[in-house]
Image 1 (cartoon, one colour):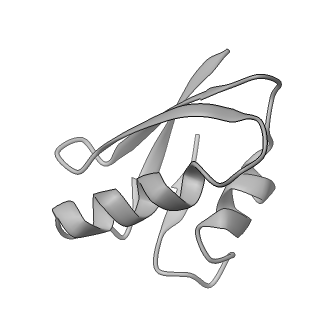
Image 2: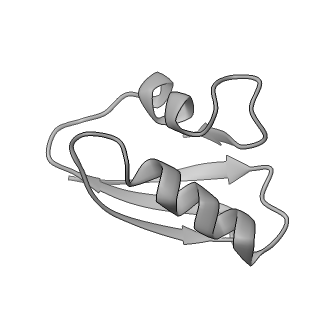
Length: 69
């Protein structure tokens, strides 16, 4: 299954790469595409992964990057 999320806090291509690398570490994630131009992350996963787990990979609620539907 594939889901598209909004990601805030990215200011450059390096940020997008950091978000992609962090999300790829989540168990069950099979692929991640991040776009700074649209501030989105498209995540393919084996089974549904909730937003709290994805946010945790990005540094938690108080982190630089925030993910939402």
